[in-house]
Image (cartoon, rainbow, N blue to C red):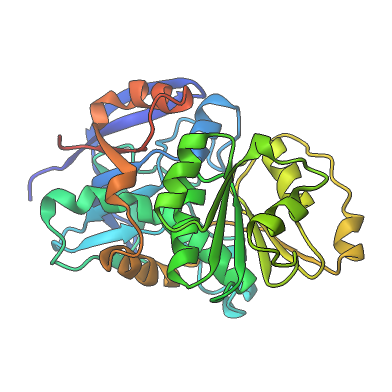
Length: 344
């Protein structure tokens, strides 16, 4: 068998990528080499590269965790952004997203900003052969940008008829709006960017609000009035997806009596909040670390049935252009989610 050469970009130190070409070593037991067909650029990657957020495995490391690819035996698969061990007490209790031995490409080991990635075979999610080959790269966004909000709505127990208030409707938040709509919930989209609000309303949000139009102290009542007087707390779920301190403060202020708050976005900044509100409102708050790999088939099915529009939310870029793509994503120059494609 001829030697396989792996190519890609390695973050040598935060802020610096270095191109590499090296032989692909044998896969360890239980793992498989996946040829990368597409890898999305996520806000988390920017945190590692620009903001000094440390990776679990110190640099040098290959970033990227939103991966779709092909196994050596020809199967097209989604690679989970986080793979649990399946054996610890958390996994045995069904809380696989709390697994302390979980592994994340581009964080615990080399990720998808390369031609190949080596991952645990057990959790790979098969993609049907009916997906056209020239469209497979688009599915990379499922592996985090779609599965993470799906995990969030499952965690809070969102059902048809509930109100889903989504703060920050960019990538992850935009997909959460679509998931909520598909479940029969009532999505409310809030963002500082009017264009994002408009996009969310075009994809199922019943109400779209530009964040600057809300008074934080009166925001709950303002939304209730625009929803036809539906009382805050009547099946209200608030999803913070902005990953920004102002967004987290607004989301917390929207939490009503008996409501549920899911923190989906991440910021390294400290946000001052009066946590006693949770007590006084008899409310619930949830963290949200990735998604259980068992949700991936459901997320993929929602995309393939047209309930979630991934194709309209992504754009393709050659892997060779990764440094410039990261710069443009960081500078907010792209309106769609960038997907790096090794072969064109």
